[in-house]
Length: 210
Image 1 (cartoon, one colour):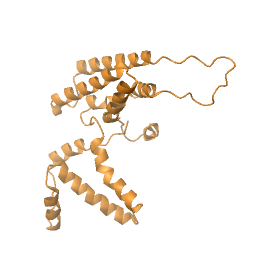
Image 2: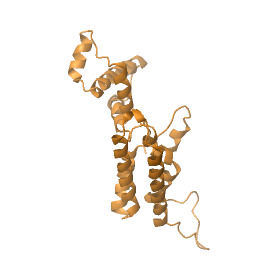
Image 3: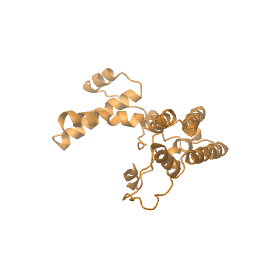
Image 4: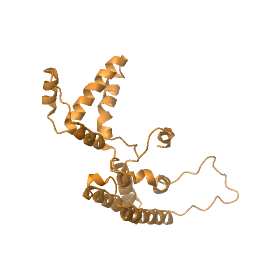
């Protein structure tokens, strides 16, 4: 994940659908209550965002502060449930490199160190809660690469991208895909209005996986 953050010309956010899956795993496999609490908090924040008019662009300052305070408390409870192991006793052979952390601690470190990226969706409504739509948008490109081994020419790749982009745009605007293809062949391709185009771009925004 961290290599993505070397790209400085864009803002970053983490996918909370991935976090919910990891939190569910920790709750069921490690029986740690903080994981269930964090999952519930993320879902609650998502509901608060959905209940706020999109024109606001962010939750109110009191809401932001309240959610961040609860978030920090849950992360702290998680670290308390996963104390640092006792250092290697004298005489034992020390392993080289960074000590391996259990899954709960790895997730807690990410939630602590990338808090802003985890909660970006509540302070900027242009950021989606998860990257599911983004993954769907690029899935067919990956399938094409796996089936064919790649694109033979740059022009072929560009044509594929234009076709998939057109179909994705039509689908996001609830337009029948087959009708959109027919209209394109008839010389009357589907072109969304500027206002609807902005909404669709926000829906399909791609944030980084968690």
